[in-house]
Length: 106
Ligand SMILES: [Cu+2]
Image (cartoon, rainbow, N blue to C red; front, side):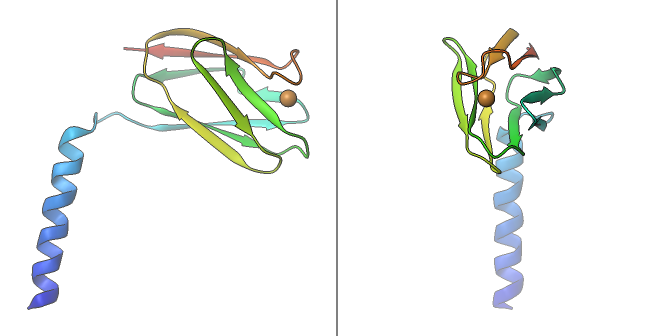
């Protein structure tokens, strides 16, 4: 009986959590490989998570002046949540030729 009780509590907790999160919040994966960011343009909605996966053996950043500066270690991933709508151009601080864009909708 105790297990059944815990299950109900957990479900109630999950329902509460879901009700405060935007329904459409998603994680969008962007790959960095051979000093290239792909896809170069992604569409997102405020509240979404952008997750960069660095497949290279060198460190990269996803840097948008005044917005975010995410360091992505070699062979690892890192993420940020987009909090404002608009077109965001970002680049890598170590390799300024690496550029990409987020198009963030309200
Ligand atoms: Cu880089």
